[in-house]
Amino acid sequence: MEKISVVINTYNAEQHLRRVIEAVKGFDEILVCDMESTDRTVEIALRAGCRVVTFAKGGHSIVEPAREFAIHEARCEWVLVVDADELVTPPLRDYLYEQARRSDAPAGIAIARRNYFMGRFLHSAYPDYVLRFFRRDATHWPPVIHCSPVVEGRVERIDRRRRELALEHLANDSVADIVRKSNTYSDYEVPRRRHKHYGLAALVCRPLFRFLKSYVLKGGFLDGRAGLIHACLDAHYQFMVVAKLMEK
Image (cartoon, rainbow, N blue to C red):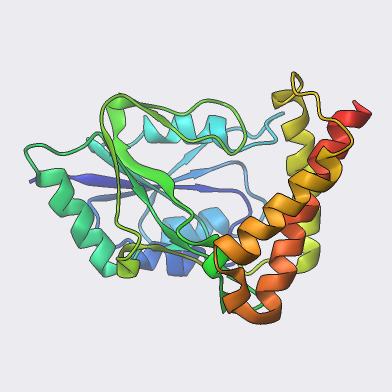
């Protein structure tokens, strides 16, 4: 039978960690890769019976180098990467084992996530696919913020209509959280887009398009005021990226 390691990257992740670990108890290995947490993260992981390895945080301000380290520390051929605020449902666990046993199994599978804001499920943020299940030895995770792993071979997506197979994202960020993250993430976007040259129209058009995509095309209008506020925050992020590029 094919075996699966669950990898959880952590840094001061005590808030949801017990629930996250409990949800993956049915897998063959749970590996917690901690970036020198100063809270009870490591204690919680050890008490739950997880194998814990440490990745020195040092000067790393992003998690991707730790992800690359962790997936190759896993002992099983297949790896499922779970954030410390994501829950794996029993149907998803069973589905992944079924896929790993296939004679024509893909090298990687992208999984949808259910996201929340102001206490509501966000239609505009679904399916939010993340490539988190793959063959360990066929995968490399580049050291670039918010990048996906590079998997050698065929990658499939779970049908978005099968919501029981989506990761449950426990994060329910406040407006302040999103604004703070947007400021940080847009800083990372500037060097990645340094060859882009936007005109003044981009300050209006790009945020407007992002708003319409979030609120209209992706169904944010179904989420009431939460959907409207989230669409405005999406537009604000695009404005910040373009403005910072112009400033640079």
